[in-house]
Length: 239
Image 1 (cartoon, rainbow, N blue to C red):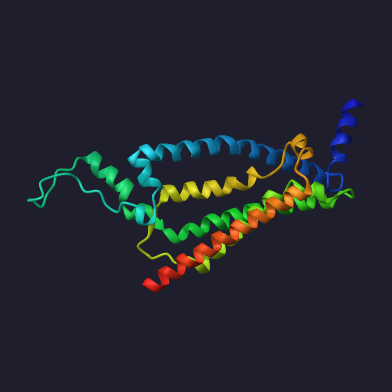
Image 2: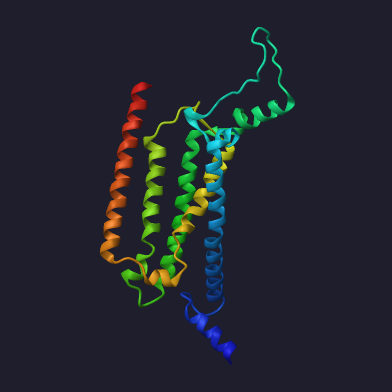
């Protein structure tokens, strides 16, 4: 009887009709929670790699892009001769770190914001469908998703800037490892803003505080867009 009651209690929280679809919704919720908990270790690893790149020339080469990226790193030798001494290790290292074969155009930054926008939109739609099936939905129940909405605005804006504002020359490159890390970052970023702790949701900020934070975020986003337009125009004038 208790087991049956527990199952009924679980089903009562579903926003889809009772049946296979409701069990599917419960599975999706569990997967969402697991993804949110997995983001922590991933971000710890990314942060450690970013800090190590300050003192590690190899990691710095992998993370640098554009003008900061070293295009070549010749082996040391006698400049009076055409041939220079270069060990097999140095050749492999130079190829991995500096070869254009392992790089992509810096314009592929747009992929980061495309991935982030898609994942964030999916999570927001999932949230909307969940709450739309509950009659007691109020503004306060959506309020803890405000950071995700602001994140989506930021990602869409950056996608627009990469497409129409910023101008990247064909010689501006970034290492494929840095590119893949960027994709992983924006794959995980939306799950940082998904509320999974009910106690924290109940202690969320007031509507006035949320409004002030939102206005501040939108203002600084406008300032960033404004400066990107200025930089884009400067590059256009040079070309």
